Image 1 (spheres, rainbow over the protein chains, first blue to last red):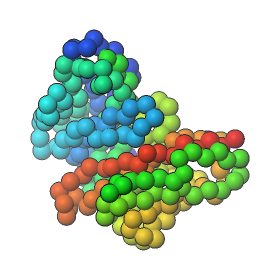
Image 2: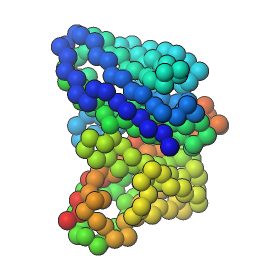
Image 3: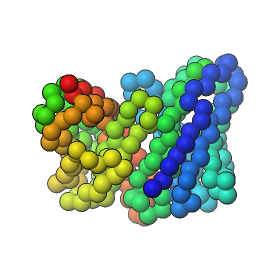
Length: 111
Length: 116
């Protein structure tokens, strides 16, 4: 099955700085890569996703990049704000798997 | 439109007791999922369903059973609870991408289960 590794497990940045979280996946058949944000005691919420036919996607201060050859994808948050503090999870889904998600172990971001 | 809801929010069980967690969605989603979340391990898929009357095993199905008798509901059962099943359980749902072109999974608020 798919295996997703996420780094770092904790990340502390100054307000206004950028934050980068990296994930690697194992199965080359994976073609969908969402990122979820989870605030303390709340449910995970999708913040951005990317499909394997795209190399980069942006949404205001958030961007995701995908390198299919190296099997890794990254979340970039620019101009960080205190409300960005949360746990961020990456995930991968294999083509044809009814969108079963395999999650990384999470990154606690503190701004 | 309530989205995805879960019942109950909290529950404490003794080892060997049984219980059922209920997930309901009002978005007419075909796909539904049950995940468990443990500290430092992210979310892991327990079981999922691609439509009414269908279920399938995920990554960690042992000790759990599920049923999807109605499209809007997905039930997760623990027949004989064990301390290792202490966790936060999240339900999620999504549309069928082949029909809608979207993959987004929407999560419920979670159920915190403690097994003593």
